[in-house]
Image 1 (cartoon, helix red, strand yellow):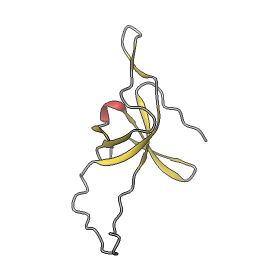
Image 2 (cartoon, one colour):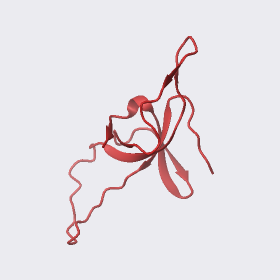
Image 3 (spheres, rainbow, N blue to C red):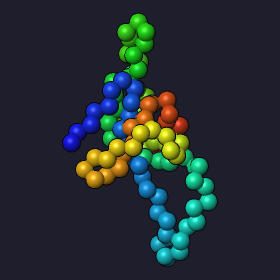
Image 4 (cartoon, one colour):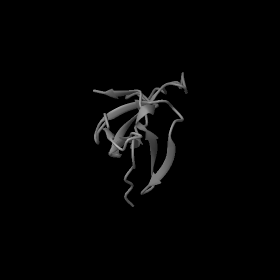
Length: 95
């Protein structure tokens, strides 16, 4: 199945953080409210203004982004969890 976001929506595959170190120690979950990171899978064309102009997207496919935990709408694609959210919900592009 292929999902192509419309308008200013973004399809993101969350990056699940490791909960163990290389030595096998468990990493505590100190903050469930911390931003989540993910990989942009696809983007819509952009936001449409009232006069019909399209404002292009800032993010693009392949960007690693940070977004608030719990934001967006979860979807399952080929048994993998993804999130669809609006571009203005993205906090940052991670280099």
